Amino acid sequence: MTKPLVCARIVRTQNGAVHFSPTLDRLWKAASELGQPELLLLGNDLKLLERQAEGISGYSKVLIACTETGQALQVEMAAAVVSSLVKEHSSAEWSHILAETDSFGRELMAHLAARMMTALVTEVIAIEDANTFIRPVHAGVIQETVRVSQRDGEDELPVLITIRPTGFPVSDDLIQPTAPDSIQRLDTLSDNERVRVIDEHASPVADQDLTSAQVVVGIGGGVGDKEGVALIEQLANHLGGAIAATRTAVDSGLVSNDLQVGQTGRIIAPKLYFAIGISGAIQHLAGIKDAGAIVSINSDPNAPIHAAADLALAADLRQAIPELIAHISQRSETVLLDR
Amino acid sequence: MAICDRIVVPIKPVPDPEHPVRVSADGDTLLLDHISLVPNPFDAIALEEAVQLRESGKVSEVVAVTLYGDAGEGILRTALALGADRAIHIHSDDPFSEDALTIAEVLATVVKKESSALVLAGKQGVDHDRGAVPIMMAVHLDWPHITLASRVSLHADGRVEVVRDTELGTETLALTLPALITAELRLNEPRYASLPAIMKAKRKPLERVDLADMLPERSIRPPRIQRVAVRERPARPVGERVASVSELADRLKAHGLGV
Image 1 (cartoon, rainbow over the protein chains, first blue to last red):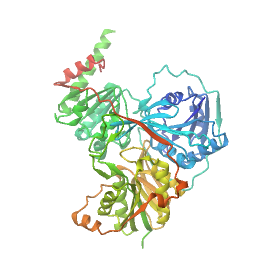
Image 2: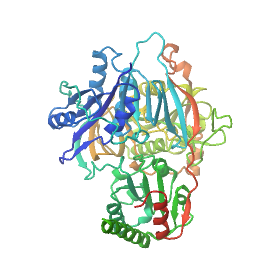
Image 3: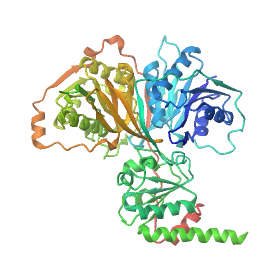
Image 4: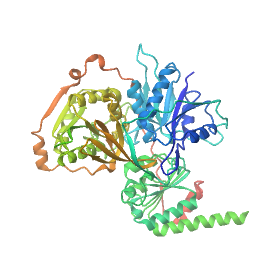
């Protein structure tokens, strides 16, 4: 029986905002395809970590590793605790170590792979068996299947994996709400003196759940100005959706960069994606290809986004969006009347 | 007086990302031969940053390194035209069979040999999107690493300040050389090679080393990760055009996506 260990971070940023992986259930889903998942929570606020650990479902065991109060969590500190855990236990304790494919998970797993000299498979979107994984390459145009093999005459080392959460959707009833059997607090993470945080501007929407939102409205360079952005925010509110953006929109200062979706940025897979004023560069498409349905609204009838969309409307967003909002509110009024 | 003698910039040759990659008719291999190779765009950003540091006098020399087959030489000529002073081509006929760990080990060996104190690398290759090799290099060198830099400032005392963007927002980190830093898209806008720069690049030193000579046989580990299949991502069905917002709303409803 193989046993995977999921690594996730829950941190409190300097402005007090809590950032935790909104995809813990998806990581669980991926890990549970490999065995009975255990969880290592890494962070910088012990109380916060303990509270989170108690409320976590599906993991039989939760380990907690925290920095000295107030100290930022660094990749090297996290890597040190994971590799010593693997060494401490017999190396066969965990068959796989998983993390999300975000800036932290990627760096942590690459660091660990070199430190432990073990195999790393990144951006996994499907698991065929304990050693065979599917991942996208070439901006998602190609999917490759890779197989990991232990070298002869060596101890079995855990295989390191970063998971692309969009590949592992979960339904709400999938995870039984069972608290973990055991929560174990590890030693305080030892300080890494080599990299220091000297300034931090936590993004106000750090906890916005863009990766798992059902409806997302994407802002492109064509949105033009803050007025256009306000219009789209209005639409997103009516839809109960999250906001995403292209690199062009971020670079022109329309929205903050944590909303960027694409090859650089996040990969999302909402049920419904509205691409507004988005041209449709291959790098942005790489981030939205897994959406259930794509709706494009762009005044340029020849914009590549229309070819990638399920429903394409060549129209000026300044007219189309208010009209769309009117349609939506009309419909919700009808629903109210029906009741 | 330069703060740092030498920056090493690893350059990965990748198929031009503007051209879609296809799978062969038998479904076994990727058809890449018709696509020209370019320096990995993120590596080009790292190179630009290194060249700007040299132009500002903070760094004496920029060395570009590639681990690749014969085609690696052309990529390094491009790197030289973009401002690298010198290039090292580690020749290997089968670069794809090497896993990330081995690539990182080879590149780290070059950094040590060059007694460089700063490596600037792209945050990921746009072909495999792994983003692992630079971090692995830092571990092999036992250097601190910072990824996803959108601004790099090198101070006279050897301290480096790096602004990086992550899911959490923007943070400024500091470390002291030696260090490895990976470049995010926003770090700079790489220059285009001018014709005089391309001509000059032909005379800049480009050293070719055979991989087998560089790493003793025993330290090269057999690949642990093998590609066993490739397929094109299933194409999305062709969509439809709608003429008005009310038609759009109707079609969404018909798709069961009434909003």
